[in-house]
Image (cartoon, rainbow, N blue to C red; front, side, top):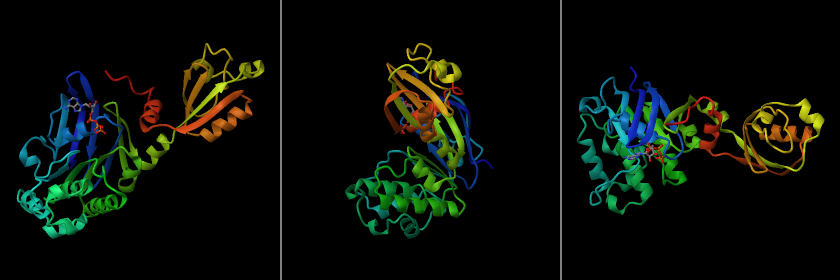
Length: 318
Ligand SMILES: Nc1ncnc2c1ncn2[C@@H]1O[C@H](COP(=O)(O)OP(=O)(O)OP(=O)(O)O)[C@@H](O)[C@H]1O
């Protein structure tokens, strides 16, 4: 049985289209990473699938039913992006309080041990550090032995060791048959946990694939250069192509049709070429004796990489 599903879902906040025709499903035992830049729509998707908000159009299902109905949420665990803990209660008391809502909660000691929180059991939550609070908030999603958990940026604000502890807790839940959906800005984080990654950008699903495949997609570099003078005419004539199409009015003529260039932007005399293989592009520029100056190669942002690569297939958001 598909545990969570969104079918052609849109969600508006006033004029803002936060999700635009998103379809997505999660099968039992999966650990799925939702990856995307700020404002991409990740939290909105999580909030729809967990019944916190309703879609504007399209359908969402949790355990085959409406996520807003309590009986469909019995086997759900959630850690939203922001959580408040009652500051005067001790960690152990908060766990007791949350666990009391479930028929068959995890024993308190086991839950705390799984997430490396045993030493904090007698501490008031108000006195915990930000990272400690976050770890408690994430652990609470597992208190009721959920079948699926949604973790919205679970490791924000955590140091390396705390992050590792949390990853171990998430992994052991999945090893026991649990299903996890987590959001992150970082492919590295998703890579540490998940095999499947769904990339969200501008309210749409831009890619739904293995981490390896997505890593290949986002390894895009921006190669910037200025053209110092006109290309030799013989070269211009011999090598017309998509770059020349992109630069019809460039005074220096055309660049050769360099393989692997995903897009070309022009900014005055400066050209910005996006490519997955910057080394090869630079070698080609040299081999073609393109008269460039001020060459600069730098990584692109995730957003830039995806929006560039998918520009042709993704219509502009409304
Ligand atoms: N309650 C709201 N009212 C108005 N706009 C909202 C609301 N919630 C989200 N949005 C807008 O919807 C878009 C998607 O937001 P969402 O929080 O889902 O993105 P996100 O991918 O989770 O971002 P982040 O990584 O920054 O948390 C953003 O433009 C955001 O400003």
